[in-house]
Image (cartoon, rainbow over all chains, first blue to last red; front, side):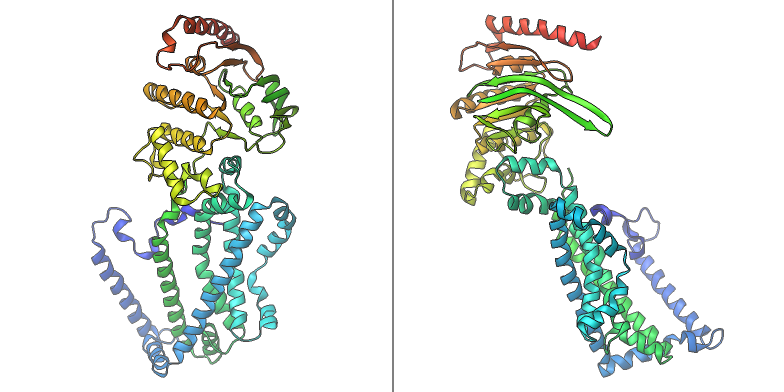
Length: 276
Length: 256
């Protein structure tokens, strides 16, 4: 579980150079440096390929780019990207809804949570990826099994955070509401859920990348489309350029998802004001 | 109306057993205003918690209007020492919370909340969040919320401790007026003897932990009281001095 104030920590990898502390260099200059570094690395890669290291293993940027443009030109890339995005989004939605509901339910009912405690711990300790064959059996080779795997990864993260948030609710606030004749439902909707809101959002935020992991892994195990399938297929064809091309697309997708989360989080700032 | 019968409360903290309250018996009449005074850290707050039904007594029983208190007592309004305003709600929404819980329409809620917010001198702060207010202002918001809940009994735990002298007087006046208007029974905990004598019909002095009743003094000052001037009357002075004399003995013993 992750404490809700975790997002206040400076994020060194994502170019917060401007507010990372006093720096003699402007952020514009830093962007130039970052681009130059990327170009240098690509050149080194191109130069090393075929001379220092067999291009069978590491391919080279020109070939990777060619492969990428080939897929874009014939439109096949978009089919795979869409399949992965769809599985990620659906998995995230289903997993987070179940996680939030389960977290609140177990959080407020002491008996059930104590009853289920050993089973939840065991399930949580289980590497969820190992469930993939089961999902293929249950949901088939189609997109449903990928959604299921993504949903399960998300579910546990969101559940644990929501549960912790509900457990953190100040008992005095609950007692105060009960003294004012709040019903159990009112206590949950007007005290418990708003109070746990920042924990829930923290859980949702950290689980976004896991939804993508679940979708890609599911596609790698058994599928006929999706980026996971494409990377698996390229690998089995000894097509290292293809593998690198898919990795780049997956990385870009992950960055885009992170960006989306940042925007949503920015709009949800109001929920962060909860501490006393 | 409120009957405490040989009430004791012990807490268990790991292996340590703490006696908070020991064998207190006491009867509070309807519309009576009772002040409980005693050294800090004695079981005064525990006593209020038990009347509110938040804790059950370890032994003895609490009877409220003929029925034994066994669960949360929703006939009382309880203003705790720590303000328990909801941090994600504005002052107005916090004050209106009891009305919202009982299903009063939104428009009416806002009007009634603004009225009591003005009563406690918080006008202009209705749209602020609790964490933007000072401790004294939060206390007043709690008081406003309790007034709006309109319980027949008010329990107040050091309600005016964080207020400056002038505001304290205004709040005393407000409390007495509203309690008289609504015919409320009031039980409040304080460590300010002046406040206790000014407001109460009866002052109860607790010993240090475990709290037992050391003495009880009726305050036969006429009502309605002028909270500003009552303290300059001779009767007030006599009562105050007598109580202070006995309190000093109590506190003196504590120091040894």
